[in-house]
Image (cartoon, rainbow, N blue to C red; front, side, top):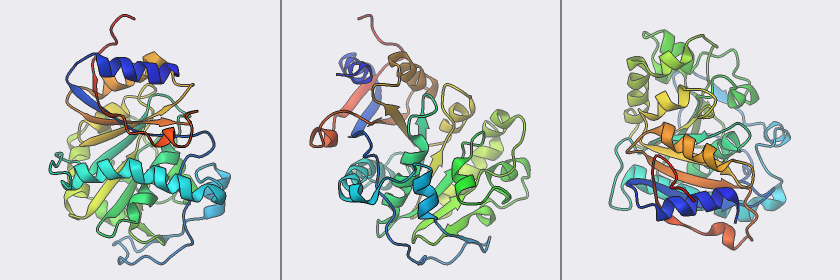
Length: 297
């Protein structure tokens, strides 16, 4: 058992009150669902008028899509990850989480696979017949999604935060993948943490969550232990997915990241690059109570 898995099992036994769900594990070098052949968007373009192509070769070259030979197994893994998230967002499981359609993808440190998971989870969710997905590049210090889609010079989230007269919906770009749209990071600014913690951010989040009743919004956020932007963002969102890299992420880093998210948050933990077998890699751990600190071992 890895140090991260051991930590999560200790959290499960600690009996505190804040729920954490360990959703699934992704085996080494088998980490997500690749995009299928490109298809034209079925929804009309947003008022931005842009339709952004997904460049599959660029995404694979950036290690944000796996080899095609791994498609079937990894499609199933991301289906397992998305099901409880969608159920909590829509109330399909009988309980709808407040703002559950607003989901943050987070990690304790860089290099955990957060952006990889954000892109592939967005694609997997976009296959749902009654769901549209908006992928927001909120990792404004390292806007990898924005760069890979060629949207560096396009106004985005930061521009809307700085200019209250901008309609956030007008900054959204559709993609040529049906049901999937993107909001780029926008122009780099100073004092982004203060902007993320502002009433303007809460207004933007509310607009994104309420404008389209069938929309799920995924925020690719900065690492929790490197900036305070994710902490500020998390306060306005309903669900958080914490990506933990098995065998790499330190035990204390996982605990510190969960603590920084604050009390009362609905957190799911995805163990990335687990060395479990493929069959075990699909294991669903259920509800795991978290607490502010790990009891002495």
